[in-house]
Image 1 (spheres, rainbow, N blue to C red):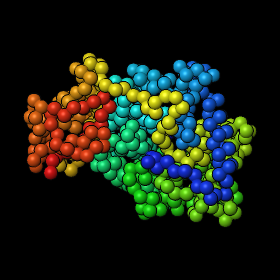
Image 2: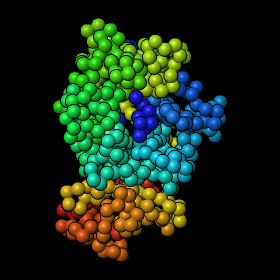
Image 3: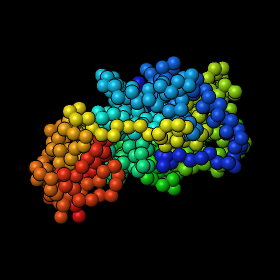
Image 4: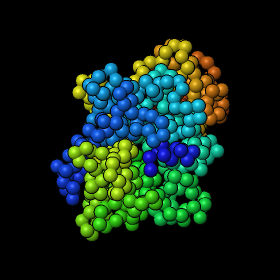
Length: 459
């Protein structure tokens, strides 16, 4: 079920893996499926160049197009480059009123995954829009590792997918391992007894853990673990594989989901396998009758039209089934690095702060208390860059959630940071920016627009 559908309920690298050559669906058939699928998704673009809209948003098309090797900036109605899909999407995300007056964390996670696939740096959408910082603001201090209300577990799954999957322009995971580990711990704790997951929280509730899992969320949770650094040989991934295998329909290769056999559930499951580097066309996923989940997806596609139907009995294509189907057939997880465009830069993003314009930055603090602190910090830079000291000072009164930073020593100047939250470092505190190696933290350390900041007690 698409995330936006779950959002209605409240609601790689990214391990992008190529579909294997040796499979029941031949390489030529896969190439045709991808080409026709891309053509269909291009037909969904509105006359103004947009994909995003209300309800089950077509913006997920960016993840499918990227997986299939098509750059969003090259997708434009009637060839009008001024309305190319990437620029139009970036403009939407930069709008102060986006996403709504009552946003939920999955709004920002979905946008981060798709902005990344479209070639828009999610932390630098504009000088004032930082999707990574927006996600950080939903950290649950009382239940570390959850993002958004813990009862709606899918917000935590998609936090893992977005924070580890939407990398920097240089291909670096931008968030610290401590944060990735906290997410992994919560995802593991929510794995049901049957090996899968559901969109709702199950941790600590034996009845919920014993309940039947969901095909869609099992694929997403598997991907979330793998993109966060969990090996595909891990016991929890092995249990998830076994759950999916148990739902295979021998005659078609489909997964028998709660809503019946359908393209969206199959697509999410295959994307989970892809993200974990697990071949969806051999081994456990080749049935006794010689069918695989990819075979099922290709059979759901109208050709030459290229759209995918949601149910096998449908007679017309579905936009969302077509997005989920193409992304899976193309070998994608839930996002993919943007392809190099034909005649444009691979990336768009703000290059600097705008003096006097409010901005947000993503900050984590490991102060030795045993509890990772995560927050989105609001500040108004006085120039094109700011400093670590200014960010830490702002976090004291303008960090969301609060309590991320309570004090900084020294309280002024540009010298070495010697204490945070009253905790002195053994030597000095350390800082990492955008996933780079930790080094000595000084108040004068330069911080740029969209930088993801991690500080920890020095060793």
